[in-house]
Image 1 (tube, rainbow, N blue to C red):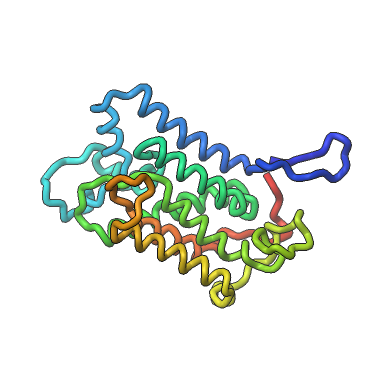
Image 2: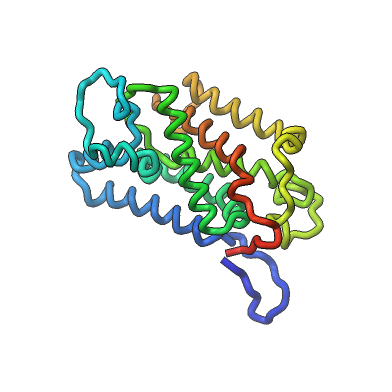
Length: 250
């Protein structure tokens, strides 16, 4: 979304200057959850979840011998559609906040279509990571956390750069998302990038061993999917990045 002062002069950026594609994704996730909560019976909702969620047992090794809905089509689409579903309002709200925070700078840099493709690829990477680490598991995986983790991975490639969004000494605030990104090996020598990676992986390790919970309840967090999405975002950033001269706010 562009901001233009009515008098044509340069003005302040509004507090919520969010790219359209990020707003669309948040509205889509909220709409899907609203339909499930308000319109579907518990039985229909369960059928929908097992049709769209990612379930490792689809790909062999399951021990329950149960037939999952969706058939061979779900073997393909569930790599992506699981990101549309959330367990409850807290899960949805948490992911929406982080999507707003990290999706905004990444979407401004990539543009809408590249950002949407990036979202799709990191969602699939998260599902693949879960499949590799949980073969045959029947528990459905849902939520957009893998893609949001991918956005965090992508953001580390440029937000800590000199003149970038998290540089306190930036001199060109209108161009903070256009700065050249450091090559991966160079970025990994940046102490702030290293610190961010240590905190991120440390938190996900705590999710994995069960000593940290988002809700305070005993719930399983698909932290391996988070790691898969994050690594995909970190490593595939250059494949989606645009030349600085091409980057505009949308």
